[in-house]
Length: 353
Ligand code: 13P
Image 1 (cartoon, helix red, strand yellow):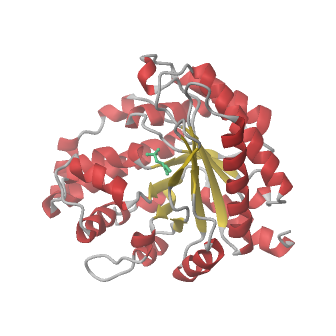
Image 2 (spheres, helix red, strand yellow; image 1 turned 135 degrees about the horizontal axis):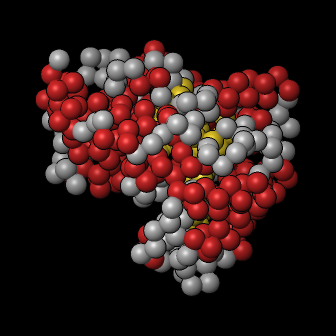
Image 3 (cartoon, protein in one colour; image 1 turned 180 degrees about the horizontal axis):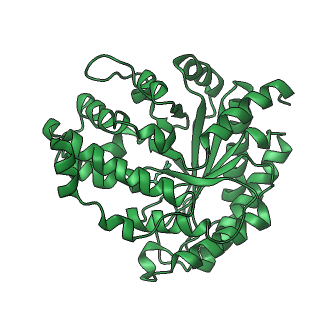
């Protein structure tokens, strides 16, 4: 059991993570995943390029207006800007909470392609190291695959147990756990299949969270929106996405959960923004709901940057625009017209001022 004064501390951090009008940037891609992003811009995957990439994202001027927290990777939480200031310090100066991914990636579960997540071994030691480096919250990602006979009940249960065990360790260490069960967008499944899978994993997860007495006031759920599979060829309107997603949330999630932040999961940038906005047009909700995107906040900025120092401020303006659009969407105040007011050539003229 977590004691009451610790729960109050955790609740303060969790509330700050989901401050109205702000959301989170996931900048915690593994080296392998960064390599994929860099190959799209023909950039070599070196430590220095990864550092410059993260510097571009973390030093965008004034991003603290839109961003409440940033999830860092093990390498990134220990890195510094070119001028020698630690990234943790940079974030603190913007009033942004530093967070850290603490899982150690996916491993096979059975033979059909399902996965569980490793990283429970030695977790307590890593958490105290990250807390000493200034981290305030953590992330652990589990993936659920929809396919022939999947997800299995065994895979759902194992992922739920591991997420709950991780969450309890974080709270003991004074760090807010983000629990991230992600029903993958890959595949040709229907939106209904995604709804069923999402309901199953969230039900199991909150059962395990209750079994372990994880404090809901100090817990953030990061999860997928309910969507049809990427290869299904089916496009659904934001209202339908919001309706299906909120139906699951209202059925399964306890009201005392501190907040919810969506992953983007492979949606386009504007799609992820419009879908988030629709969640806030469907009436009042018991929890703050915001964004915690990686690709849907970074893709345009990465393309504008291309790894070239001369593109830094253009790329940062692209990033700030996206962050602002998502900030508005987290309040239900976004409209696609707002995208017309901004394009990369405008970003260029802003950056030359
Ligand atoms: P995407 O927004 O690119 O899905 O990434 C979010 C994330 O943190 C995945 O773990």
